Every structure is written in structure tokens, then in C-alpha cells.
Image (cartoon, rainbow, N blue to C red; front, side, top):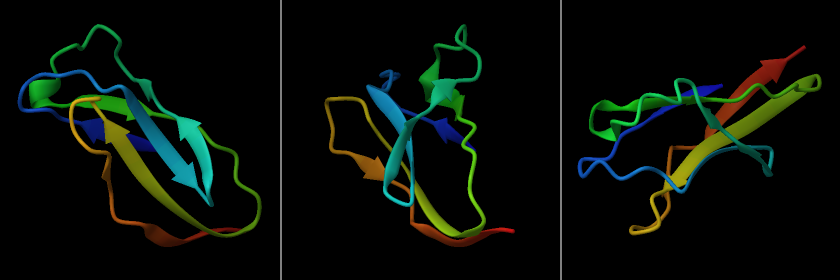
Length: 79
């Protein structure tokens, strides 16, 4: 899974998390040397999934604003 974190003020995120079926997975910056969040910084995590239908959301905060979440994605089928 991957996501791009962007902050107009350049603030680094406190956390970027993937929540799959209610389980939180901390995402890591793809390129740790990319500290400019004004143009987006890529985050990723690898999560093994069991067979079945899954739902997920990506969420983040920079500690100065409320948590921001993507729309819930449903219907991810592994099988």
C-alpha cells in the first residue's frame, strides 16, 4: 500500500497510518531524504492479507491539525 502526504506549510507528519479491517499499520517514508512535504512525500507499508474481502483507510496528522482520513476503500478482494 502507498500514499502521498502533502502539507502546504511543510510540516512533517506525526504519523501516516494504514488501517486495514480495523488494524493499524504504521507507514514508512519511501525516501527518508525527501523532507519537503510541500510537494508530497511518499509513504508505504506491506501488509499480508488473508483471503477474503477487506476495507482500508489511510490517515495522518501533523499534530497541529485534526486527523485527516481518506475515504474508506471497500471491496479489496484477496483470493
